[in-house]
Length: 212
Length: 230
Image 1 (tube, rainbow over the protein chains, first blue to last red):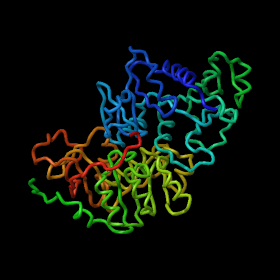
Image 2 (cartoon, rainbow over the protein chains, first blue to last red):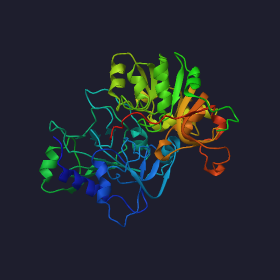
Image 3 (cartoon, rainbow over the protein chains, first blue to last red):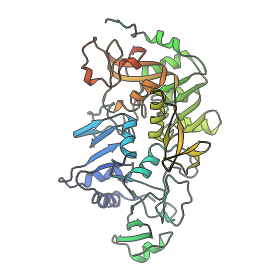
């Protein structure tokens, strides 16, 4: 069960509120790619792409694509004023050195202590970790945007991940269509409930205990 | 064009450096910044049992993916093969050995090979068996790291926007990606370039890869694949 575009945009809009002026932010594919559409004009941010762009801008108009200017997913992008290019080693140097303030990514499962499992889809071939491990482990803040439950209606926020981990204890914030959770040292805290959902609905659809 | 360092060669001459069973390190990220003319040369020469080292396996008909899809590789060291289902299929069938390395660590391992270091110390994926299994661990100043060995190749193949006859290189936008690292890691480095300009016409401060790392320069015939977004 996928989420409609309105719900996806609502999640992206809430994530955009986490971005503060001057940040360097890396975005994953899926809902995270919608986040820039919801940034207020006064927030200056440099979007980072693993393939060596700091200062990525929106998609180009049709016909204006440049095959040598693409994001990490291989799709054409543009750059903003102040952007720079670098090689892959420098790009990941920024991540490991803690210069990337935030990564916003999707996930298959997140555990109550912030374990992230987002790189091996069950029953599919092993795609490889790409840059996900470094981003999850080293970005200063890790925000997960995802459906609250999977296509079978099973909770994706769980006590312990059943899928192979990308990185342990790395997630700081989870935003779903139902609400916002903060991961802390003493467990999961539900911070916001989105209409039309109730506390009870969130409790029923979450696979672990949490504070409210 | 002057060829004062004898580095500018034809694609046919460049192909004399390729044999079965060799290790090729390739530049590019999802095919962007991979050298199309050299890749086609490798396909035409029908070399096989190759070990390939690079960021990813491209797409089935894009970049290094063309070589992988034709079954010419015995082994690949990469961070990601998800955009090339043929690579996954060959891996499942036991026809392609795949070693996964986290993307930035792979880049550093290639860089280490290129700058004369034996290994790097990394704390990425230490509790992940796919990354950490079989790797030596060391403690430096109280912190534990994995020893990630340097990667080198018989030949590096890269793609750049401009070269001068000495092999000084400038890359185009995000097509730079792994190319400057790969450029250093081959025993022989062959750069495919869009344009060869006279010696002295590149500003020294603009050069990304100094020509000392580049053995041969091959003029590009241009990208001959259709991009995934097209």
